[in-house]
Image (tube, rainbow, N blue to C red):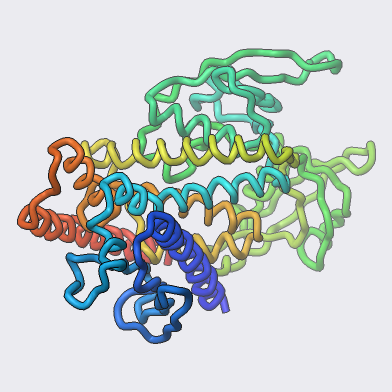
Length: 457
């Protein structure tokens, strides 16, 4: 069922993005007076079609589900001998260069507009996200050396307010690409117990390379979310119950070492299968000590042996829901789409000059995996994924590679500069070169997908 859910989530996402992209081309072509012969979802042989409208445009499903196209009346592809004079005026290449630019650019623009609307909808709905309160960092970490401490709440980065953890990650990711350091404004608990102390911390980001951004680069800096204390929840039949532990007991130390929080407690138990542990705890206001031996079991899916004492420990960080009015949400959607597009272009540029590994190129397998994962998490995560993929599709199609929309836009830019269209010979050579580049990128993406799949397996 997991594979089926993944495939459904992937094809729903892909179908949505293809339809939106091609609708952009279609609607602007109609607005510019160009005759549209076919609107196809999918590539290759047509397996279903119907004709609608004054022009009897063919709306089709094709056999290969990866992509789609809008076929217009075009002298480069059809014999126009039997075409009426009225329709000849609606032929694509007879339109002004500005109209052709509008038609070609409309596809990527539609993807950007979809992303803006999805982000705006999410911002209006409100998304529960972790509050940026920090967990204690290792003493040798960049975060600790910079002066960040457990309980610090990040309120702004380089003067820009942040409210949730995803905003912290996004701002720092942008600064890494810009090779700039971060200035964090933080609220720190007052040791005297009243109010908060305000502090500013300079966080150097030079230790993070652009390649690190694909993983948990915040952990490499020593930044992680604060977790609740190690307070026991439901007790099940097993070592914890046998040892006399009860719901509500707060674990303060293991074998004499203080327990930072619930996550630290869980990690220690997992690493101690079959090893007796002395737990110091508090029940109500009364401290007590108990000895428990975690049972050693196989972890499902990993093949590793881990320790378990059969007790629930709440680990969820503090959460907040931020929702905006429609105008603020739209403004934030535009800004997020713009920032994501700029970051994508910067990443592509760094790949070209060798500063970022080609391992960051992903293909359909990885995208399908992410689609399945986000769909299982919930609709909010899936729509966020859809927005990011829509931006990626828009950016990719604007790359100046022949066979992509950006390649055609490059031709039209040259036509504006020179005053005449590019020659057919030049177009043919460029098309072959562009197809070669695209095939090479697809092979790299497929290789990366297979390597990721094997590594995860």
